[in-house]
Length: 520
Image 1 (spheres, rainbow, N blue to C red):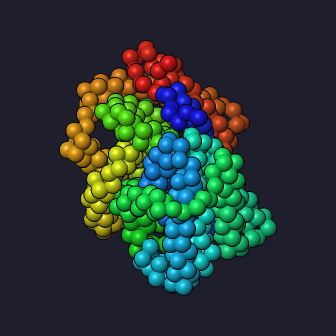
Image 2 (cartoon, rainbow, N blue to C red):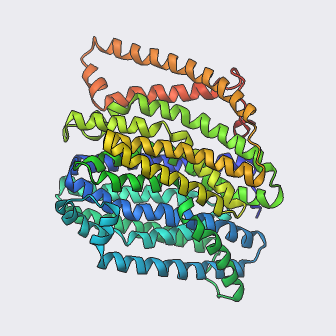
Image 3 (cartoon, rainbow, N blue to C red):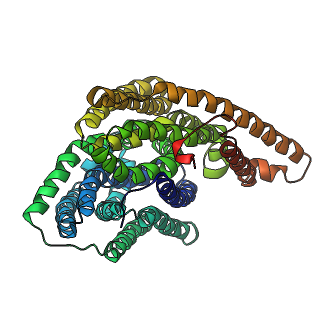
């Protein structure tokens, strides 16, 4: 089997992964909408979302982040060398080591949940803690299944299988939604919903395990070489715990700072953050997941070629996510007044959430680039540089969070996250240049940006005229209220957005836009 990917294969795998992630995010929106409708915005919603955020945070940092970034390059090397015995031995030892640590963490959280919550949300009231403690005890064991799935997904990625790692979150969300419907129609308690979420993580883990064996991987004999390989994994994993993802760490800091504000502030930050993360998950995470093994091989055989791939990756991320940013800003108010909250909270809360989403959305392209750039460092077995960059960016975020909270409340917290995300992108490029003499070809990128700016402006003007024309004509019909103030709004806006994206794709050549991954 060939493990090298052509650009067509990269795009195909990314599209496959991105499509599944898209459905996962759609289910995620339904999930968040149900949570908002059931719990509203207040002490219970803050408690539930914080208890859910802690294992989810560890999943993205510990499992899908640092663990995947450290494990995949080493496992890929074993597979490429056709050393199946050592690959299986590495999996066995890694599973025992990391899952053992996770079991200890689960025990500690079960015994000391209050202390964990004091760390995650130091401003929580006694009422919020009363709700959050039992929720956290039920939900935290998810991290065991998440980390196990991440290891197995790393093995599957080494043979370019991305379906199950991408489909897993879809299954997770479907089961979550089923239990939320149970809460809505059959009066399930919030604790029962928590058990449903835990069950979903177990099912996803079993799916990964089944496909792992289907590809003839095994849990093999541990040898001295297995210990050497694990040592190589740990040499990348430990420094990268801080360096893997600015979004998750900064959103976690946001949660801690926001816990000092009025009840419900944390929930609104969470909802805004979920929508901001949607395009990143669909495009950037998909692309980063597919490209990490490719970057690892490129770093081994043709490291200078990475300059070209980073430039073209930056271009396609910009091309994909700039329209998504504009769309989110354009419909930010309707997201919360129509889709999320309905009549369960005040218009004031919906407008606050709207501006939080706008502040977060400004940094979407930079957040996405950070996920790509950090994988470049890991492909070159460098965990020190991204860690230093993230530590600096995190201190910036923390300082701005405190100042922003004092002067601007919850808006200052969202703005500080965006600023620190932009700063991290600049730090990553700086370290790539200083340490590896990386050349970004700024002239090439800015030439692309000018042409794309002209293209997207033209398409936006056309789409805006189409949008206003539709609603002007609907004013004279009995359907206006449904299409303007209810779910029919999304039929029109999503249709126009899809048409706009197709026009962007079809008119690339007309505007002289060339992107390697989209060329034939």
